[in-house]
Length: 332
Ligand code: AMP
Ligand code: MN
Ligand code: MN
Image (cartoon, rainbow, N blue to C red; front, side):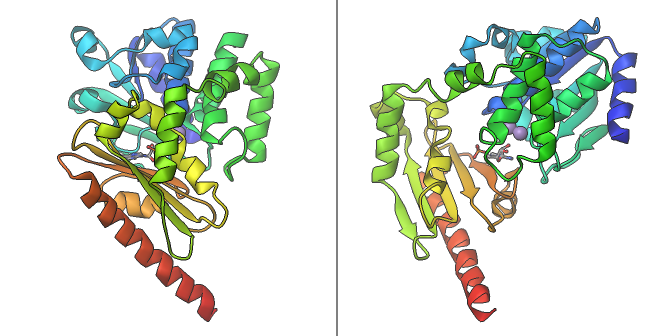
């Protein structure tokens, strides 16, 4: 926690602060950016909140989401900031166009990805935390930030989403402790779950039916993969954000150890989402292919690529490792 106290000292010395999250933002990213931004404002700082990407529609029920800006919209204000705090991002390319400013400004990185490249001037990276939001909760409490139910709900959201609503192996007793404290402070888990889980668009479910239609199994049913092409998004009147969560549903299939969803959005920009259940480390494959993530949830992205070619490369790598793992298990 020594790093956390260094960060507190750094925050005290700066007045104009950028708080940034990653592209293709998820619940943890949005929660962390908002929780730290609100907290710093309560401490009297000027804060610019940046995520250089569209925010998925589900989160619009949080009015605070409106404060999050893309780089182009605030380009003139960036120069007057003294400090950039990057959250939940394992490498500098994850912050979109803000990446161009990281070398000229003092940068702090707060993250829980094992694949983090420690690209800040000061890095608090600890993969024992469930989420960046849990780290922000500890940081805010240490800075004596006042919590009301709004901040508690926003902060709880990242812990909830990154633990799969308290189901994944990262749901430690520390997670329950912090979540319990946030619920005592007014955090409302039902508000969060109805906003994210009970807010499905019919178009999205039709897109998921298409994903199920396109499932392919290999390695005796231990590996499932599927694909969504750009044309499919258009046909079902969906965007990339509508595909979030599908890969976890693929992993939930009986007997599946690894699930992969290959997404093309927009044309020839390909993102690969990977999930594993018990033993397969998908972060290693993601890192090898230029991405990153966690052992059980990772991803990588390719520009100017053919979706079927990417699928073939990823499937080949994963099948091979799964096959070798099986041989090792059988010889044991
Ligand atoms: P996703 O499958 O997109 O939900 O991502 C799963 C995890 O992998 C998240 O923790 C992401 O932060 C990480 N991740 C996804 N895509 C990338 C990427 N292109 N580079 C680095 N990390 C990624
Ligand atoms: Mn994230
Ligand atoms: Mn996270």
